[in-house]
Image (cartoon, rainbow, N blue to C red):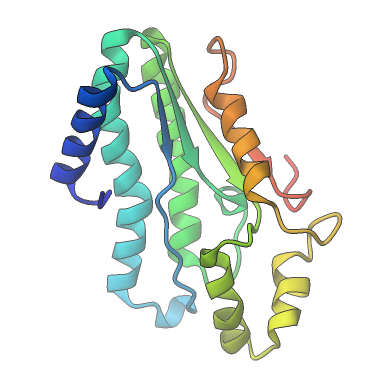
Length: 199
């Protein structure tokens, strides 16, 4: 579904509940990246990125909450980033959106508590997905450096071992929050980044 389209989101969640009878877990994971200096950043790209990351998280959350509240159970997991806590050049709307997910999560943690609904954020470092692969040549061009230098000295320079986070690493963190048997872990963020950002 297009997570920025309210009607599509409402229908997608309703169809899911019609098929499976319930919705227990929402993993809000839609995202894009646009790499540009802030001074040159097109407003249309700014709005599109914020819409996918933040409006999408809001719309999917709201659509699922009705069902979660009715059953008195739910686990909402937002896909944040190290950029939920830190910043990098050329990523103004992405950093802004990822910081915003922390705020949305914390509000839901408080509002959802009486309905046994938790909210948490998984904050990966760089995962070598198509989204990251696309950034390597873009950042190399914007910064006037080689792609190898981008990987080694921009993306992975602050990790403890120079390693990318893997999709399995991220899945383990999501499962940790999704499988929680009580509300002790809510309103939290878990950074999965090979030590790039340490809380």
